[in-house]
Image 1 (cartoon, rainbow, N blue to C red):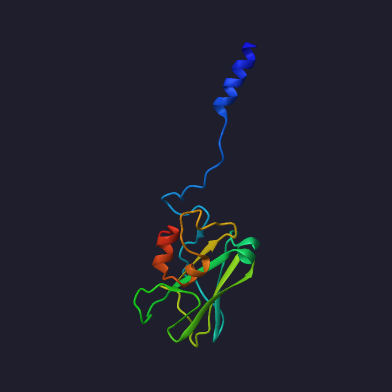
Image 2: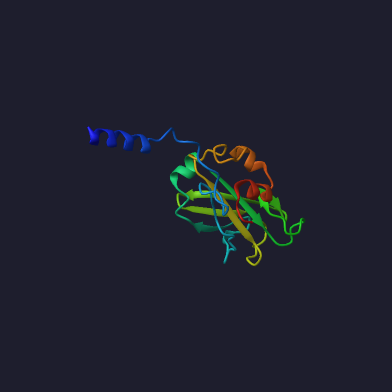
Length: 163
């Protein structure tokens, strides 16, 4: 009888209620969103009007590509807007700038420039948003579609990404 009462009391002490909602991301960023470093190309492949350079990153998974979201940004010298960070696709310096995912694990930044793009000061970055992220549960009151239309600084602020 003594052991039954102790067991009953012990069971009552460790009983848990329903799990609450997930907490906000940590101060250093959103744990569910990956953001790359800024990449400066060491050189461009291709030909006049069809230039590209690639970045390999194992975080560009099938799930991200097929069901999540990828946001990409660029900052290039001699832009009409000094120090501008533009969401891609973009038109700047008389050329279109885009990105593609030619295969899982790789992103390529491209331009149709009629000149060989430079390397120094040409900066590119991407943000990966997994399909399982629940932005509202993270305290983020927006959608991926809305993020894609936001200025870079606002995306960084919203997703807690260091600029």
